[in-house]
Length: 225
Image 1 (cartoon, rainbow, N blue to C red):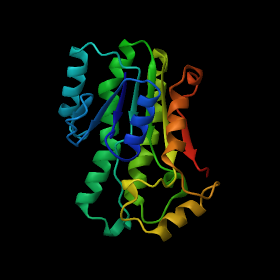
Image 2: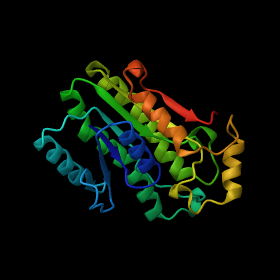
Image 3: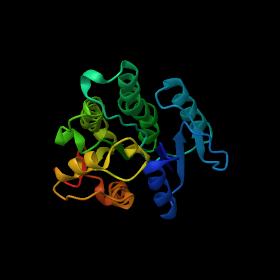
Image 4: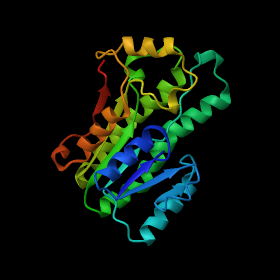
């Protein structure tokens, strides 16, 4: 079984649908209520106890988890000095703390399973140093740093931890970002074009394969920097 956070919308939904098409058993976690999906848990990843309840329920059911894919995230385009405190807290809590909580809570299930994969999500904006995304970049840079260290901590248990850092992808995450801003990001990439969700789902699939067991602590910049 694979857990996908943020699996009910945007890139998370694309990852979930792709994995299910490949025959994987996927459990999704998001703040949305998805009554038609029996394998969905409505949960705020910034709430440690709420995530813990999902862990306890899966453990009670005897679920064996082989991978955790953390797609949950939000973005905000603001200059640092004009970013409201509430926005700063929401971005950091969702992108960084939520990712850390999910890693902490579900890693023991992978250890019990004697191996597995964790895939966290960053952004190519971290390496570009994009103006107007200071808080968002800070949150994702934290995810990258955490993932590198966590990869070393979990290596003895045959668990890999990697980050995927996409360039702009046409999902709800880009709402509020102008076409000019998107073009500016793309112009800084080695491959100067926006990516489709399928470009990311293929990389997720690659990192989940047995052949990728020796790839860990890496950040894959999709689009190139």
